[in-house]
Amino acid sequence: MTTLQPSTTATEALASVLTDGWARWVRPPDEVGVAELRSAIRALLQRHAPPTLWSRDSVPFGENAMITPTGFVIHRLLVEYPDLRPLVLPPQLIEAVQSLLGADARLEILGTVVTDRRRPFFEWHTHIDGTDESERYRAGVWPKIDRLRRIFTLLYLDDVDADGGPVLVMPRRVGDSCRPPYDIHQQRWPNDVEIRPAAGTMIVIDECTWHAVMPMLRDGERIFVGAYFAAGDTPPAGWADPSLSSVPLTSLAAG
Ligand SMILES: [Fe+2]
Image (tube, rainbow, N blue to C red; front, side, top):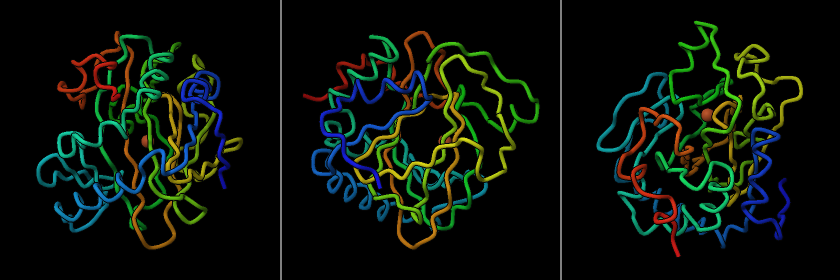
């Protein structure tokens, strides 16, 4: 079970992305607005009413949503609910992102992912360039990336316990090889880290960091708000939303 670290600022918490490839920013659920976020997303889910929350191949489903191997993905959460902006882009987060990626960092996309026990073990992968990992894996060619270019953030809205789909991360220092150190189909890797984020926890991962997700072993939904942030000189990923990425990060921050 994660313990709270009340005196840790976002900038302090996120700094370990550089040395470990991932970081955790823990805040109390009330401060994060977990209940408000969760009910907004559940209302969206009811409105979309997908027949399933998981599919081996991605299938578009209505406007701004897809059923995918990741889960039911609702892109552009802020288009649906602009009022959530202060909760998902608090000034402390923007400051921390800029300290990692530079003052001209930009938000590429922000959405939500809902899964349930239908999603099997989510194999080891990275999010390098936002390109299809299976093609890169087949080709066996891995880019040399020696600086932090893009991070993604996952704000968990449920207490993820042993049955709730823990996240596995393979620690990696910025500049280390991007090549997978072990078989991506193997559930546990030697020296991996198992993370069980409590509701309100934000997990932050470098695009090059290998990670996987254990299956959920109980009923119910597992919801997170996800976002990609990139350094200003990083070529935009194909899925970047111009309505976000063309706006300076500081003017997206609330408060
Ligand atoms: Fe991932």
